[in-house]
Image 1 (cartoon, one colour):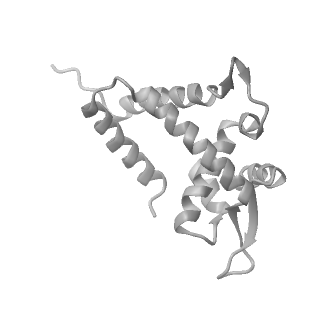
Image 2 (cartoon, rainbow, N blue to C red):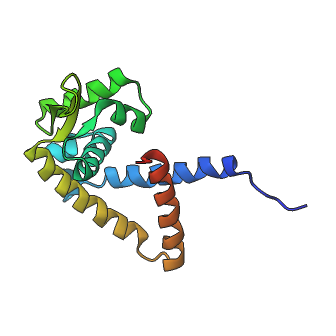
Length: 158
């Protein structure tokens, strides 16, 4: 009888590895062994993920992204998402703007400073991923890319 793992049994180790790699990259913001004393090093992992998400979504939706969308994507309650955004607004990384189609709603966009920080974060993240994938065969990277793309579109169907 073949030893076949169920899909659910494969998911937990996959995400554990993925998040372990992301956390290692998150800790990699050092210079000469010391943590950089800037905004990047003071942001936690979730704050960085939210900034990246806002930056990604506002490229296709210049009017911003709703707080509900952020909460759903992170799978956190709306009040928690609101507190997370408030911390980023206080640091001038993002802004609350009125929804152009429904003025009762508020959308979230990156501030100019937040956009600069995101560009820096993307450069560091891309460099970290390139270093992490260095030495892995192209076929395996292609498989990883397909899985990561499937996960992304599952999280952000639109």
